[in-house]
Length: 274
Image (cartoon, rainbow, N blue to C red; front, side):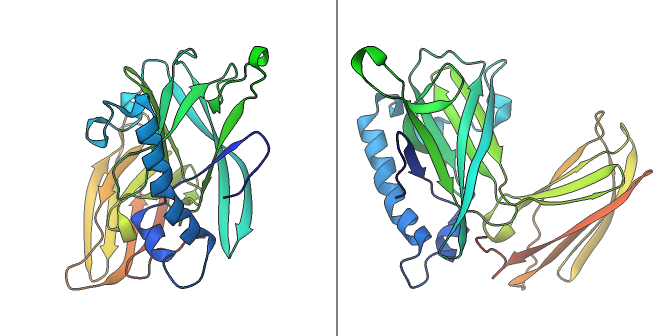
């Protein structure tokens, strides 16, 4: 574990793919993270009253479940290289939730259930911390520094929850994205080895009809779709092809004002920690 002054460093589990990627020989940083994480989570849930009644089965996940007016911003605090991998540090900032409440910080790795990570509080600036400052008792504030590794398009998803108060947010450290003209397309990993990916297109005209061409391995299809009122389009794609262990998904959009496409590898050997 990396130690810094007056800061709690939480080394989080990555996706199932991350753990497999890091399971080779040698004492890599991520082997160390993977070994420490279950212990940290176990201690958190045993010692934290906030964990009670909030099992993984009862956590409804996603920003659509945010408390009214609540937002969670995942802010990058720095990157460094360790054993050939990029370790990214994040801080969380919450607005719209009361500050006089004890929360639980949750994380959801790709391909896994949500996991309680730590007891948490929100300071006067909205920063998520493990200990609030108390000058009268000579207690220093202890910010939570979230340290992660990730692959291309892999989201890091977080939540701050206490009973009816809840807020969700995510960040993609290494986005898979492309922009052509007014349109942008991005792909986010939703299943291990990119067995499922979320495709988002922005910059389309409101409610316009456009053409989609998909090709994955030896299979392909051409369809029509309609943009939302705000000019966006979202879909979930399962690129795996029966009888093939790996391949590439090519997703192309042709609209009135743009044509944009992306390729994403899937299957064996497709995932790599950056």
